[in-house]
Length: 249
Image (cartoon, rainbow, N blue to C red; front, side):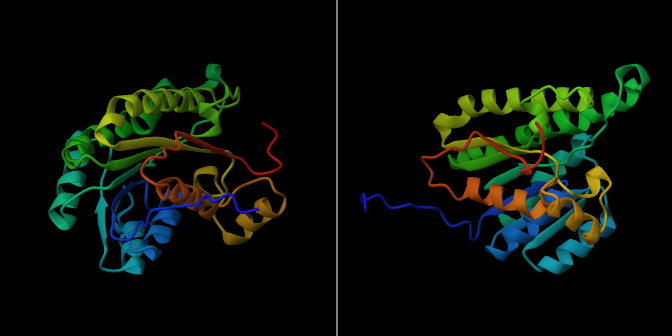
């Protein structure tokens, strides 16, 4: 029966989007998907060759910026060059991340510090850099790539899990600070994703994991990100958790 409710979504065409960690995995899949919707993209990552190839594939509406997001000057340059090229910033997808599993007793604290720097501090720096422009616009979307590890304590990846718990707290508190200015903030929290971060490097390997319902594709996560961004302005999806059907978590 028709209840008179019309499902609405907003067009993403023409939106200026910064994607970090854009050279592979979720970042690259999201860049491709958003390009097809008519978005203008700044692609940031450490791999110059992969970024250049992706930008060439996408075309003139992509700005490739090889950089190290743990360097504060690089984060500032990313936002400045986006504004110079496109004139505004509508979406930040803070997606760059690294992964370390293993036992605490066997771990390397210096590697842990780098993980926190990339997964947490760099994401915070990116948010800090775009906020003045979004506040002036009185609009914008900030999405941070989290993980199911940010929602439950996973004992085989304690440092990674700690970093994603920090991301969740940051997202929730930031959202409440900037909501009155018309800015939406949310996190996308996937479970296992068959991509390079997990050492899955070929399409055949990806297909094997997906066919077992043991992993998501990067493209699945990209579509969820687009779903979050396409909601009408009065709707914020604060947390979207998605798992492969057979992941036992």
